[in-house]
Image (cartoon, rainbow, N blue to C red):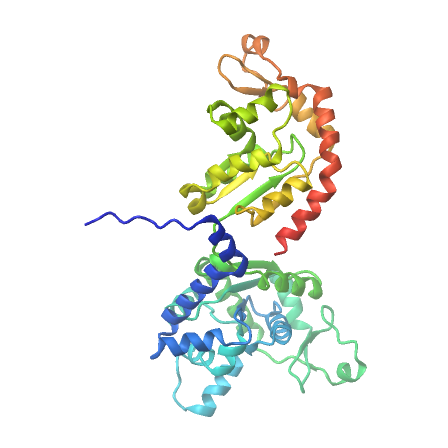
Amino acid sequence: MEKMVKPLIPPHMSVYADKHGVFHLLQSLVSSVLTDQPDDPVSYLISVLQRSSFNIPRIMVLGPPAVGKHTVASKLSAELRAVHVTPESLLKDQSELSTQQLPVEQRVHQRLREVDCFNRGWVLEGIPQTRLQALTLQQAGVVPDHVVILEASDDVLLERREGKLVDPLTGDVYHQTFIWQANDIIAQRLEKGRGPSETQYLAELQRFRGEVTGLRSAYQHVLKIINSDQPHADVYQQVLAFVRTRHRSRTPRILLLGPPGSGKSHQARLLSEKYKMLDVCCDQLISSAAADGSSLGEKIQSYLDDEQPAPDDLVLQVLERHLSQVDFSSRGWILHGFPRDLQGALRLQESQHQPNRVFFLELTDDVCVERISLRATDPVSGERFHAVTRPALSSEIQNRLETRPEDRTHTVTHTLNQCRTHTAALQALESRLNSV
């Protein structure tokens, strides 16, 4: 059998796919058709693509009794125009259709397959309650994009239970302390919330505490745990911000910006090791190119001999040569050391290797100078030490340490002053690119 060869996707195709969400679209379509297993997959996929919004919400709001699930889920469904599905509505729907008692997982599965949930999305409140229910729902194809677990201490939950008020006309939940209704007409008709006895409530609370670890494990990749013991508006804004995030599968192309000494190289190394991306240190690439004897290298070497930075067009040629390789296209990369100014950043953005995430590491000038000017290199081992954070292991090593010319205080200060003239523009570019 011939060895399978992974096809090479040209960099410009990856950029196009990221920009238009192609990989995310394909992943969602395949996931949907395999989950729902329609009789006519082609017609089903056409109906999915024809929905008014492809990224419909699929949200679960979980938590112990009296934590505020209903209020949060109600506001979410109203703001996102999604269907609010509760345990009570499931029981009501079933009683209208059949006298046969179905398992809760089957009732959820049937409800979420209906037309309104398919077209508008759904916010499922209070279900699943156990890890077994969660796994059963996953096997049935009920896979949320976001799961929120609201948490609070037992004392806070008991206090909320005692002060619960309900609007008999709308079913909206309020509280004497936490969520009071400012409208006098509504406030006058509020009634004390009905619920289980204290013994039953404590049993429900204990049951949730025993199951919450399993629920977290079942949904760990789409989960956000939010402390509900804070103003309701703050809780809701945190939930809303989370459910508006999109989980996209794409090859990472990360750009680290920041003044010298801000830790770009260190963070790049850590990210590279953890996520198996390629660490692209522009200074090292430039040095390697200058030493390879090519015509491009000779041009770069002439600038280095004059102690001048290589111009952007030469740097971009070096980057093009490396980032077009198979490993960089498939595994992704994290670039640091370029660009130095807004012009270079814009030229990188216009190339076939535009980053899809940009981070600016900020630091005060005093700390930058301290980090750089106090470091020195052992010419024997090549190890780098720092007078404060990583001192030499012996006096022998200390005596032979050398400070690079570019690490001397006056040089660092001059470099920082040049860097600061471009800081605002680069930070603005960071915000703009990360909002895409």
